[in-house]
Length: 87
Image: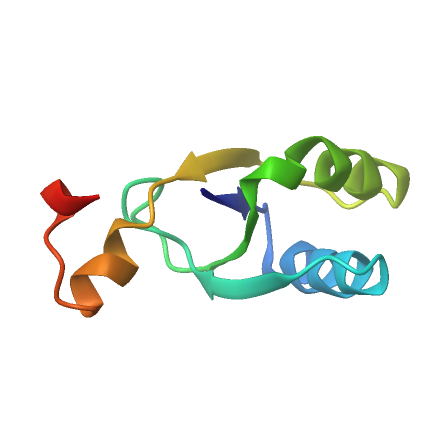
């Protein structure tokens, strides 16, 4: 299961990517998913099973977040030709 982190600004998203990569976590900058906001911007995708670790690191490094959300991997499966019902 994937998770996304939403930020108050692009600055924090870029900082979070840097901090979490240095801690050995695999993260990816993505456009903010429409189910969370209609605003343009970037979010950070990560393995949701690491949520507590990610949250702790970001707090320790004083990286502001708006929210951490769990998301289904529906978009990728659609790109691979699978229907959301097949998930």
